[in-house]
Length: 146
Image (cartoon, rainbow, N blue to C red; front, side, top):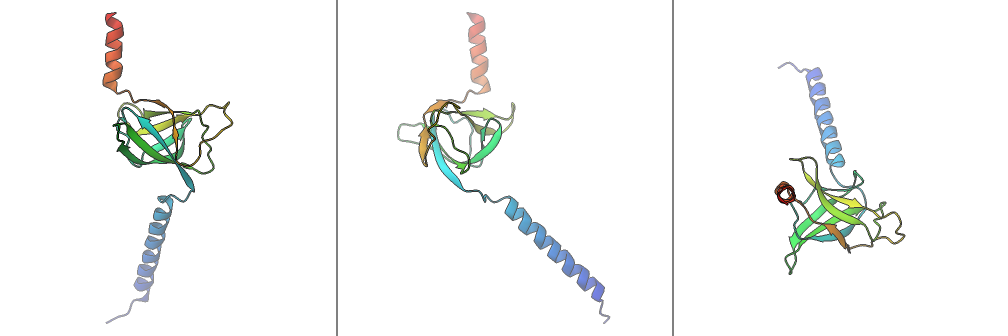
């Protein structure tokens, strides 16, 4: 049996390279940022699911953590925001989408005049409920018939 050290070294280097890429992939896809939790209550959650983005002025600032119903049947969306982003108290949150068939995300519009910021586990009071395409079309038809 002939020993081929070159093939063994090449196989070992391939294994090391594969493990390095795997560790880098895991590191990139885990949330390393410190966050704090906020929540909002909607009449219609409109397809928001765990893992959707939270954006402020188009920039990702967090992730949706949980979507559930409360005792009054409101859709409660719990989300985390990066610790270095301070959300003003009188900000508005709405459910938006990336195009017609795109993913849903929470869009936060801050009020720049506000000096007070939301604390951990506080609720954003100003919400705009999700309007589906069907809702928007029915509004247009209703306005056209008047």
